[in-house]
Amino acid sequence: MSNQSSGPASRQPDSVSGWSLIKPYWVSEERRTAWALLIAVITMDLLLVGINARLNTWNRDFYDALEGRKVYEFPQLMLLFSALAFAFVSISVYNRYLRQMLGFRWRQWLTTRYLQEWLGGATFYRIERDRLTDNPDQRIAVDLDLFATTTLSLTLDLLSTLETLVWFSTVLWSTAGALAVMIGGTQVQIPGYMLWAAIVYAIAGSLLTNKVGHPLVSINYQLQRVEADFRFGLIRLRENAEQIAFYDGMRAEESNAKDLFGRIRENWWRVMRYTRRYSFVLNFYAQIADIFPIVVASPRYFAGLFSFGTLMQIADAFGSVSESLSWFINNYDTLVQWRATVNRLREFRRAMQLPHLKESVSPATVHGGINLHYVGGSQLATHNLTLALPNGETLASVRDISVKPGSRWLVRGPSGSGKSTLLRALAGLWPFGNGSIDAPVDARMMFIPQQSYLPGGTLKAALAYPLAAASFSDEECCEALRLCRLEGWVDRLHQSDRWWRILSPGEQQRLAAARVLLHKPDYVFLDEATSALDTENEAHLYRLLTERLPKEAILSVTHRKSLAKFHRESLDIARPYEHAVAYTRPPST
Image (cartoon, rainbow, N blue to C red; front, side):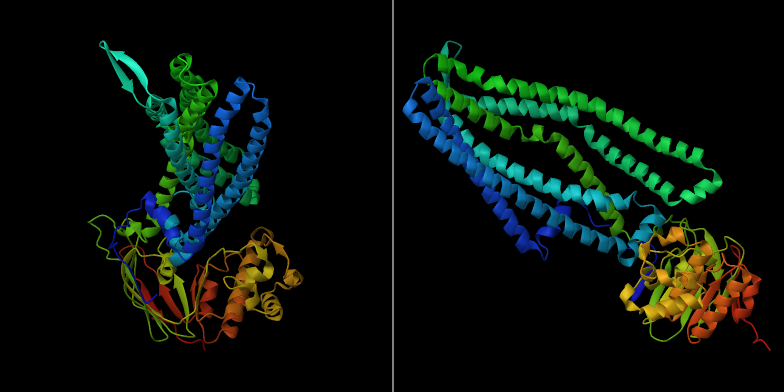
């Protein structure tokens, strides 16, 4: 990152539409495979429509043979049916297989891309910091899966439906013939009247279904949200089980869980009410569709204009046309869920496209933003730095400092004065305020908070984080553990476990120090990183870091006066509207 500006946002997020979510995969590096699979699936859909069309003709011949007691035709018809059925089943199986393959490849590509955008440039941190969206984990793990599979399913089903509609509309138009009706004493011929009846029937059903079921779009959106909130609450309860047990907070947690589930209950009752109305319409529509074509075609049949087999063919063709025209009705609930999923992903995309939403604060805000520049040289320096809250309120002013290689800085100040916020600004995570920060372009920096992150997996992986476990030898890892007085864990170096639960807070802080010894960064920032340790162990770690990292700069945020002897330079962070004082302490004699 050559020059990062964190002032007021200079651009608005790109417009996010449903098409902008769909298009990227089909023009990506996987487009050849994607289009090949899509063409194969569409070809199979065409073959299935052709087989269905041939079965429609077979229906006519079969029922005519039954009506005319043509025994000699029966074996041939059954052999033909067997061949058509075998072809239909075989193509259907592989059609579904390729659909699943294409759907998963699409989901895999989307997941990789969204993970890169979410984790790249600390976007995930800014989304949480600015509270841009809820439950991004669900949107990546669940919504992307639903989006890929449902979009593919709806699109391919719609194409197949259109193919079926064109084919069977032709059959219905030519087979059913025209209906003669008397209008004002004049006989009027209605050509292809069965096709027009199917169209009117489907349009009426679609309009009624949309009117009754439209509220389900927003209800399903809320349902996904409240379900995710409830699941997240339970996960937090499980991850903090010990702390909750110490506080005897079971009643409070039960109350919170019930409140979260209460939102699910309220939303679910709304889902039930509107689904009941929708189900009435859908079931009435389906029941009437079974008898409607025979009723409409019966006048010409009773007039002896076509055989019983032709009547069955017309009824079957009417069913296919009506089913095609009723695609919207039959897929309405899926479309509702798809629309809710698309809305959640659009919201997520907009959040990721806004690097700093809250930089655009009120016009009264005087802060222009903190600019982080990566420059040549070996010193980390601040210039006219002012820290602010997201609402523009001044938090602290920091005099110009220059952190040189091998220097030891102690950052002091009352709670809430902005010490940790200063570290966030140095890391490029806090844009609110004014001034600039110059950081060496090739410098390796490591920020150690009060509670360091420990990933799942082996203890060695936790030590090597964020690098891969193979980046360091077992000997290096064991030495770092011993130096930090964690020799009891050496034998468990390759054991996988949830270390954030097993290790005590003090052991976790010593593990973080061992991680620093392994990585040997150019700059180490310690934010109350030894607060859980006793004075003797804390002094041991600071002596260890001082001896083992003589050329590396260390900047510590702490309240403990006992650590002053390990630092030569000090920075006192003032309260709001007071100045911070930077000075150099004389060397100890």
